[in-house]
Length: 287
Image 1: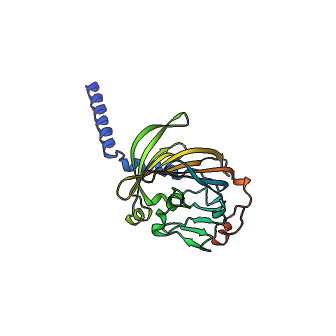
Image 2: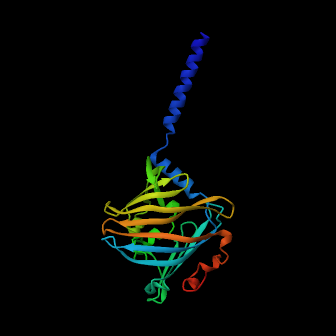
């Protein structure tokens, strides 16, 4: 009798656990959000500086020109993922036709619209990037103004699609394939994207590759990680930083490779302070 009773208890416990597993099963949306939320909260640099280049190729694969810029970034409340805000500024110095052009991005808290400004010396005044300007080419490259700006985590929906293995520089990496889409229709229209699919390396937070679909649902652009570096931030925590990305426009057949070198972070950078991320410094020497 005791043996039968014990077996009955075990069976009931098994049924209960099974029921609870079904009742609280993680959906694809829940899993996608969970993975990306962890990545969004990973450590970042408080400040960094680099030399950035954009190599722009035509549909025949020939290099048209290389644009070079000095760039800097600063994160306020960098230790608190729920409060930190990222700002960046970029000054172009080559080729000669682009010397003096610049870009500024200031992230705003909450639902406030982020500030994104472009300075083109031919216009002689800064122009704010708003609305459909987000889908426009960034400085003649295959990256759009929206691609360059930092993504706001809460603006997207997430859906986990699969766990896959991808090749990266002779290594096989386990990555999570996740679909992202803007929650608001107006955002999708502004950026010109119906959805994005990213292959994310969850341990580092690096996007190894990505696909971007236009408003007609057509595969429009592909992004591939070219290189990255690992450095420690002000608190001694590791930060994985993409230093090279290729954006291919499948409809035009063109591509742009963005690369970074001479990267300095934290104590290596002395002149980077919050005050330089303003319109005043968009045309003024800050490095």
